[in-house]
Length: 438
Image 1: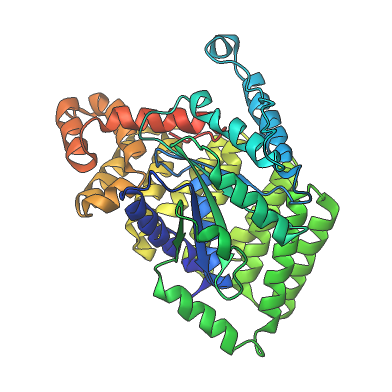
Image 2: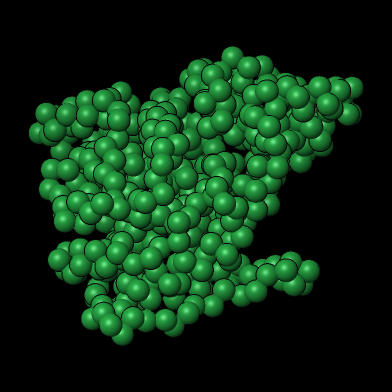
């Protein structure tokens, strides 16, 4: 199995997650993904997918990577950062939008009866996000707590134990990761209101096992992974120069040892890094290199194309994004993954419309509809077809396609009130400052 198959495994984890949420988890405050180091990389990719602009579940995912430096300040540091982010988003709204919403301000509630007040302060503030995001009764906020560094693991365990004992709003759940080979959170995860999840994907174990057996011949790949993790931590700390230097070391390892998949991964990471630091020219240069170097691996090339299209859209280069997403359709067909086939057509159609090519958009949307009709219902619900279906409705009248007939066709695939539910998803995503291409 190649590194380019990551997205396919992420979708499998997503199915497992959706199955869990169909159970009664009202009493669960904390989910702990417990797996070996390789499997946790896929879990982390799953979280990134849930945070992404194209993910369409009704729930909100938030990721906090603040370093855990002190028992009494960790929660305060997260809340302070969240206040800055939310208010920056508020400032970007126009007057009409601002009139319907207030600034998010942190509460200063503490618990004088407890020695530890920071976790209580954190919970009280997090609880207010439910009303701020104006969630419906069936929507949840999943908060992933993954510190970039932990000064004292005992104190972090203590902080977590206080966190889950306080009264948390029913729509809010926390997520952590733990290494099954070297578990750090045994006491916390033994509580009645926690649940341990193990990724239900056998192939990940095979991948991990292969890398362990070949550690002598593939040691450069292990060093590469370690350096990329270090770069990620430096990025979390906003240490630009050191993060860039680490990625340069990753590029060197991949080139010298002829590791093409890792070379593409490094270029994509660098594109994201330069995007975060607002270096548009360099970000586009890096992602273009990622696409060029991924010719050997179709799945990896498709990921790079999706990333490049998203960057071009961010930088208002919509005609160039159209050309990129047009390339993605035959590639997704070649890979023969239905989720990717639908998503590539959705994005291609969206930018075809933006480029005044509605005929192309309509044709590709019809192709997607035919693909979806061959999928089972759970797969359809987990796909991005809802967003595509909404675009089809808006175009149907221009192409003599009966609007009501089309609506009923989509309703048979996505369930009743699918359009209303989709609107709820979009509103929730707006609250997380994740713009959705729809």
